[in-house]
Image 1 (cartoon, rainbow over the protein chains, first blue to last red):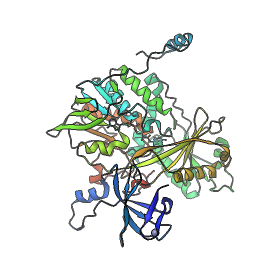
Image 2 (spheres, each protein chain N blue to C red):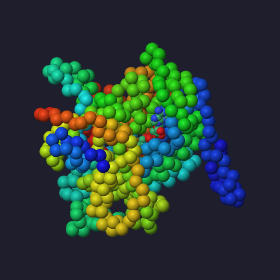
Image 3 (cartoon, each protein chain N blue to C red):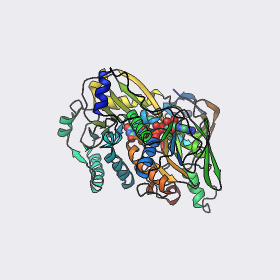
Image 4 (cartoon, rainbow over the protein chains, first blue to last red):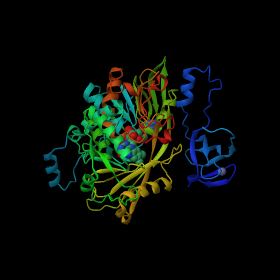
Amino acid sequence: MLRIPCPYCGERDRTEFTYGGDASVQRPADTAHVSDKAWDNYLYFRDNPAGEHREYWQHNLGCRQWFTLVRNTVTNEVLKESAANPGSGP
Amino acid sequence: MKNYSIWSLFRNAFSGHRSWPQALPDVAPQEQYDAVIVGGGGHGLATAYYLAKNHGITHIAVLEKSWLGGGNVARNTTIVRSNYFHDARGRLTEQALKLWENLSRELNFNVMFSPRGILNLAHSTAQLDDYARLGNAMAVRGVDAELLTVGQIKALVPYLDTSPEARFPITGGLMQRRAGTARHDAVAWGYGRAAALRGVDIVQNCEVTSIVRQGGKVIAIDTTRGRIRTPKVGICVAGASSRMAELAEIRLPLENHLLQACVTEPVKPILNTIVTHGLFNFYISQTDKGELVMGGDIDGYNRYSTFGELPPLEAAIRACLSLFPSFSRLRLMRTWGGVVDMSMDGSPILSKTSLDGFYINAGWCYGGFKATPAVGQVLAQMMATDETPELAAPFVLDRFHSGHIIAEEGKGPKPWLYH
Ligand SMILES: Cc1cc2nc3c(=O)[nH]c(=O)nc-3n(C[C@H](O)[C@H](O)[C@H](O)COP(=O)(O)OP(=O)(O)OC[C@H]3O[C@@H](n4cnc5c(N)ncnc54)[C@H](O)[C@@H]3O)c2cc1C
Ligand SMILES: [Zn+2]
């Protein structure tokens, strides 16, 4: 089973976590003046890489914190230690 | 290549079935085609067949990187239905269902379409109301839908635990009797053979590696077997859609996810309809050979490999046993997975693009098999006329900018939550 390193609790089974999707997409900073196109791109369009993918996870059966992780979508290898991501999620 | 007939069956029976000709000739790609379809799954082969049959465009090729039926077309759980709430999806899948009903005859190939019906179970009165609403939406469109009582369900599916003591007691269900299953790999072979009989080149072991453009138009493609000049390219590559569009510098609203299924040992006929759980995502049917085929949710995070994990299968089997406790004695024979391209609203993309001559058919999520014949017709029309056919209009790429998204389940831009 995929094992996920929670930055707070350590490595646990994937079944303790909830997936939050692509964490590489940047929410437009100035939401009052963002163009419709830029907003739609942020909401809907993805690189969908075969390889390294930066993504959100929540340790919902543990500390309940959201964090980001870089995982290889082909091999499932976790490439970078997960990073604490206080105050934000997907 | 000749059509199959009762006479060819007789003739070959008398010679011990040793002299059947090869079903599909092995061809090498030519240097130029009027149109090329990338991906030799059900969708690509059906598109080629209808381009030839409905539009008389026969100097075309289907390029498949591996072998026919190696992708999701033969990995799916074979369910064919048109019980959608949204008009757009309902109409496209109903068009397909009408074609399924006559497909074996049309293709001169037995695709074993079997209209055994699909039963969606309800576990509360609220859910039954919801099914009544879905059934009404279908009926308005002229599609068959029927609410069943627990008594009727019990008579129809005797092995189902319909008792009030069941883990999730059943309160009724929605039945679409014209829905059913089809022999999935025969669909690929049938369309492939029928297209080849009309002169289409079906080239296996030929991977498309780049899209050659000039002045906003497609002019050629590069493949592992050389360059092919063509003004029109349609992609039907399921899990490879994002990568293929990237070759044309187009970004798609897609994420790849892994969907698994499994099959038990064959047993005598015990289940004569497709049954789905009303609370969990779970579906089961019995094949003509006697195996029970079942599936559940996707693994739940972006994935580019067909190798899955046990927890989603475990969840599916738990759901199965809550409905059919006696199936716990069956042995599981095999599990497998397929990479599905999940779109951001759970609905497919059938669209022309900003690049002239580049057409996209993608984002079928869990459910593209059922649509195969209609996709073939519609995409063929789009490629032949360069116009957007009525049935495809709601599925254009532009909907993600215009706001006309088609979210049957309304879960927002979270593909891993769609079914
Ligand atoms: C486990 C599972 C269960 C499912 N159950 C159902 C169901 O019950 N009902 C239903 O309606 N749908 C179901 N589906 C979905 C359905 O199988 C797909 O939506 C549908 O088959 C996709 O269309 P296709 O058949 O053309 O794709 P595929 O058969 O995947 O065809 C795509 C082809 O493109 C080829 N290709 C990729 N890249 C290239 C390249 N660069 N060059 C050349 N060729 C390339 C691939 O090799 C592949 O053969 C299920 C899917 C899975 C995985
Ligand atoms: Zn934790």
